[in-house]
Length: 138
Image 1 (cartoon, rainbow, N blue to C red):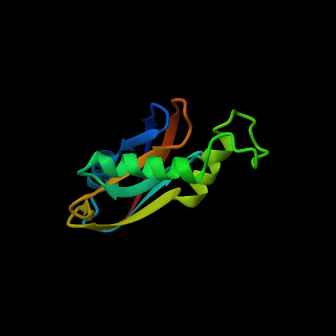
Image 2: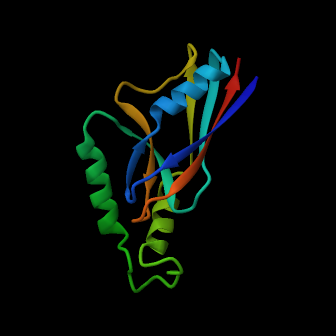
Image 3: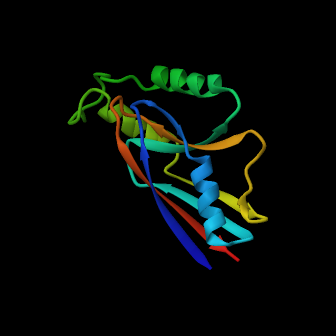
């Protein structure tokens, strides 16, 4: 059996948006008791991360590290069609993930105790991001 649900995720600019509940709801809707859940982000300037969900300092530290690693407006970058954060956002996406696969067990996404699924917005301005949650199982 295959089931898909499309999500629209509003971001506030460079930040993390927790979509764990939406992913779990899509798995429940599918009726699958076991199988695989794939989460796919349809964009090249945001990413998906499976991350620690108890302490927000983890996400702040990830953002601080990435900001040091890939600087907005770096003179090395030629691509800046949408501003100084444009190429930095693309690099951040390439270094992270556009899709995640999570096992389905007992009718739910089988995440670890401290794991959450997040959209990580890499642009500095707000965006609406399209995410597809697909479940294959029975």
